[in-house]
Image (cartoon, rainbow over all chains, first blue to last red; front, side):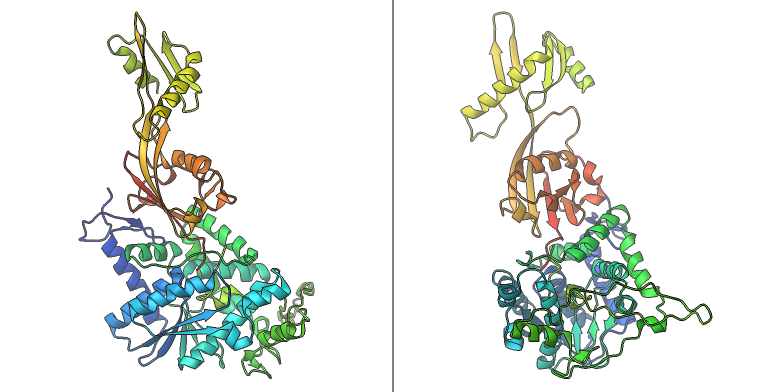
Length: 357
Length: 176
């Protein structure tokens, strides 16, 4: 039996923490985990007294732990937050309807009000209907784009001024890696921020940003938090899965790898010319967009007219090699990525999704 | 294993020992017994087990002859296996499995050997066994607990197991 590594503790260690490799007992583990989240909240100034926050709740492990910890810390440190649970019903039979039951349990157990918004009421389409029409090929793009906007709309309905999502350190590391692989420089520059969201969008905050998935799962087990898990019944996001598996294998060799990748994402300097992306508002729905019409509206137009190419062009122009002006060192602005999920899939809109395998 | 066999040989009246794997492959033979008897002895034990299928004890078969008697037995370990976080869907959707595993005790029973058993027996009808066991080890992203403690506190895949231990597999690979 290994004793807890913390000073003045003689309890039996039950876990080697993913984050720092320290062997600690149950009580110390729970304290350290909550302390980590509290530190992130304080250091990154995630909340202000009086904030009305919507926690993106999918019923999965991350959002279940997130809701529990944020509520616990709000009581313990008196953040003065007004907390709501926000769930998105994508309309996937046998998947989301089950997980919404898990959220319903959280609502009762944590005593937090719950708001559910559905794709059907927002867009007139359920994911089941979308898949019926377009097949299983690109459906994750629709789901991801729709979810991001639905979270914003849901938070608006609640009157929340912040959206809280359950992104953890493993998710961040995956996203950094994916953005590098895709050459998505603009996203690489901001994907590790603890607070994201552009001017016209609700700020999104990620209190679990430095929490390892291993520690989150252990926390849920030690606190007897029930969560929902299953794969989405539709096609898995294979690109993200590749990054995910790769990082999990790295973690086995060297757990630090996860924090190192997040650190790389945080500290990499993006040249101004490369990251500029002009944000405007969608001329149809008013939602923030980098194009005159936002992606969600384009995808919807495609669904409603039966022309599924709209907003979904799979032909991405091959990237020209970037020429560096040898005199000024400046680059011409790279063309913007428009293909596939473009990073708007589960990677950014998680917290309600599943990073399904 | 050789030292174990030597010790048994030293016991009074013992004239021969043969050690075999659960499916009859001979490992060691000493004294009057030769390796060719291994499959026969293993088969005898399996048949004896079928006499009382509900009895979890491993039978000891004794063959009495005029001059001597032959005894046959097998080593086994009782374990509780728990599958959670989505990994239960890979093993018949059942979270708890009480198993009795027969093994050759020439070396300690480790998680590595348990993993082999799980792959061959519990994941027999699973179409995606690699979600739990990949490359002879537990897939990265699946947490392993021995009696509710992180296997990383012990020897990981080489952690030795004892009778009555509980081993838990929690998948973090299934989204929510």
